[in-house]
Image 1 (cartoon, helix red, strand yellow):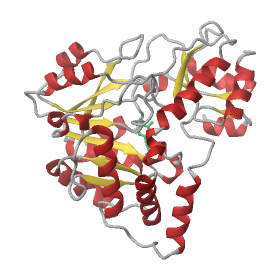
Image 2 (spheres, protein in one colour):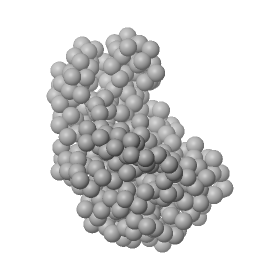
Image 3 (tube, protein in one colour):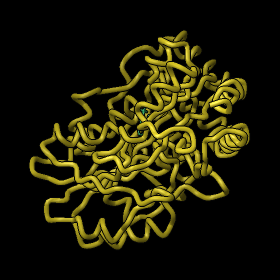
Image 4 (cartoon, protein in one colour):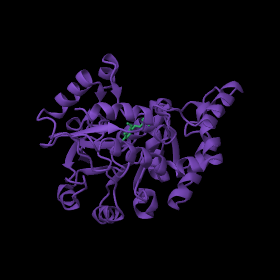
Length: 364
Ligand code: PMP
């Protein structure tokens, strides 16, 4: 959709990336390290300073002490972390439970590892997990469950009750949890992010993945991390060392400084993004799109059934080419798409961009 938006000069609210810059002070730190000779390989698991800074962030955010030496690996974006976690712990014949709509990088990695993705639909409205169904679908072959909260593409977030259900379901199993928490600092309405790192029992069987790209408005840097207990991290690194080995040194050093000096950046992110979510929703009040404000992420689903009967892929294509605003169809995130007319907008945009897009959307 980004390519189509480019070709047709459309406002791009499709792919998830901000149209504003990372904090100036972070850019200054990158510049500083680039210019002062920090341009060679970093240690495999990441620069010690960044691992320490991530451990501190986790302690401040979730009250969990993780060992910066043994439990954290800095990766080339969350994508690499997800891939390595899956290749390390999914074996031929294994089943992996994923929830549809699901982020698109999970299944190819599962298939490559020789496993099978077992797709369970999130229940609508609200896009929540039916834990009774999960329990029924677990077999002796189930080696992993992948969860993603806050959730792309729906903006749903898991609650403490969800985590309790998860805890009960996996208690007597050897299932490993892969928790995609790249939008961890974008949870709205005063709710807290239910990271698996908050729960010692679950954290002991989990690989938790996050992305600096999302948190620092720098998706193009592709820097993220994986947190796991030593016995899991060892298996993870056996794959990671031959996939990537290590991540851009000056960026790691800059992120470490910025995390330590400006924790308010990620602490204030929920307010920053909920203001954008509310602004976008207000701008669309006059439109024929129907919106339930998202609970997290920088995505907003919109129902277009009052406007068109077309499929979501046809509708988003038409909207991009004919009207000049690009969005993402939701059906592409499903194995078997249900009957629904939903598209996803990214509101990580300057107010000016949101206003221009909304002006068009209100006329559709
Ligand atoms: N998981 C989810 C749910 C995402 O939305 C994204 C980015 N679109 C990623 C992982 C990948 O993050 P990164 O850019 O850090 O590789």
